[in-house]
Length: 419
Image (cartoon, rainbow, N blue to C red; front, top):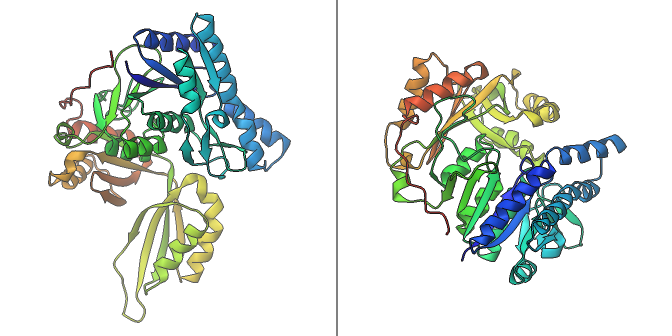
């Protein structure tokens, strides 16, 4: 007998019929002899509806009250799902974040989990019932309700799986697994049987939307096997697991793209020690995350040397940070400040990059053959990212995907299902 955590997102519980489908799936798993813990998100569209109400009441809602409001969406889903399980003849109990309890810090709307007690969950399981837990929420040291940020139910599920020593954490979504790239952009994209935590973390951070980044971080830290699969079929999905030799044999596991960044160019900045530190220190002080950074070679004499500094920030932060960037530009002697939101970051990810030379050169050659100019480059041990004009997004993704053989590459076998 295995201990299985199953998480169902908003689409999966979007209607009463879908909630009944979730209940039937959980019961079927229990009838195979397993203990089952369900984690549910709010019904699709519900969180947005609640947040819209808050902004209709006040232009700047209090963050604490926002969390108290937003958490009710998951409370509704948990109660309805428990009722649906009961209506099918099986015992179930709904549990909220403060009942378990899921202890977090007090960073309202984006709290981080500090600890989870599994005692309440085990009490329900010992009675032969299914535990239905509201995702996305916790409680701080003051007893106030907190939420974990968008996609936080994924994090709830993986964190609970780690806390109770679950054998697997199944993440049910409206897709049937993790693909080599976005199938809507590249028709030859394939579902991946098995991918490492490291690769999944990179793909999630680079624009893949299947799993929330923090959930992958928790899974990797505690070694929780995660199975991403469809709510609407029984086909096996994608297992996210630890690094293995078979995974290292695949040079490139996937291609990701992110249209959510904007490029900033500070032209002809005074080139002397401390200038770059001043620029990025000021951005950090405003909690602005910077991704790619490029500093060109100095020009001019030693006494009057200058350089161009280019970096990217989230588009959602750009308008807020423009006044600061303009001020910084003046203070470091920039001749001009330029912005470009018409860009996309295209990336390749794979454990095999660690032991295979020439991957970057091959990526650049593939893009060059399509006459795609690279504006910036960043790399890590298992990732290479290029900044290009957004009009080339689909062309670049398809060219890289098929150029690295992802349309036909062999895969590591998927692990056996719990029986």
